[in-house]
Length: 113
Length: 109
Image 1 (cartoon, helix red, strand yellow):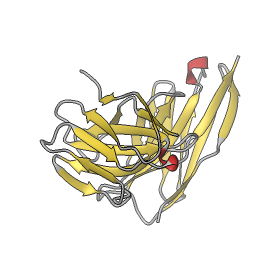
Image 2 (image 1 turned 90 degrees about the horizontal axis):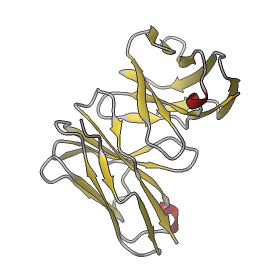
Image 3 (image 1 turned 30 degrees about the vertical axis):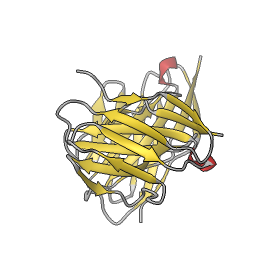
């Protein structure tokens, strides 16, 4: 079984530039999560999808962050414009349903200069 | 709200037993997860406790006491490859997952 796929693995951009991350969850997993993880910290939930529906986006800074999961499979997370403080690892995870263990992708390490 | 506390760092010797504690303050939750995360890698699932008591999986065991507001992860026969961060996470239903800051475990030869 293929795992959660994320791309790119690394991204370096200048502040005020846009950036997008892509995630392909494990086949058949209805629930998809985007997390932000700073060094030495646990993952912090940004948004959670049940199929196409964003069921929890309360922690997503909506002035600059957006996400979509149009067909209930792949998802993209976008930041526009990026700020220095956005430098972190962005993790995508999926689960069969909301109560199951989560399977994490390798993450995208974003550096904003 | 939900606050989760874990020790920042622990050190143990190869072959030993180590207990990593997780305490929390919450009004209610469905279950508690433990994940392992090696440096630069994604977290991987270790265990999930719904009921009070001990769940054993090989060298790893996890314990939950709802009345006392804590959980622990027990690692036996430590190996060098167990050097990693261990994350405690609460699932409170209504789609809420909260992760602790993690405990960085160093296993020494």
